[in-house]
Length: 265
Image 1 (spheres, rainbow, N blue to C red):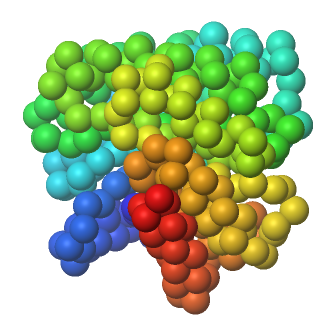
Image 2: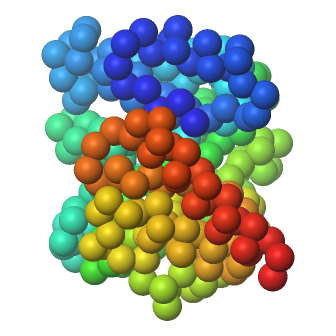
């Protein structure tokens, strides 16, 4: 995935697409947010048209999938406020949208105008990766009401995508204790009708800073054995800094071992 938030983002993306022999994914709200700061002075001043323009640009450039946080709704925010959390919102894209929604007192445009998103996906044959903006950022927040509320919404959006002929997958946590990983996979598979599940780790402890390629590989192996389809690798620099080449290498090695361990079960 190209998660660039600086430099010439469009040029970086196009260079990656040209050079890559594997599918490329992006998170268009990152570029939309950065450009909103440049044009309007703040991410919360971004317009819905700005966001959809970024999504269309990425799709037109030929990315294979885009992460879109369509399940971050005002209802999910209400659940989050009522319940409270230790780590609040840790998803960057989710935080961008929640800040925008609270400032503008409006519904998430990716949810409110979901049909517009489907039209872009159809036109450019791009897969939607429904992001988990409410994913837990620590074990204490795992499988809470905000996370589950978002997942239920994503299940409904999966059905609408399938009815429109759009390929779709769903992203998941995050930070999960060992005994909740299989539960989360089974829940996603049931609610989302078996579409591919893409997990970010999951990290099985909060105290592995500097070694989160290991905590992520442990969680990833369990998740994949339980039915997860797509592992997001985690680097040793997770939670500490941006990764360098060696961090990326170590993270990919650990994740590939986890995937292999699950594949031979």
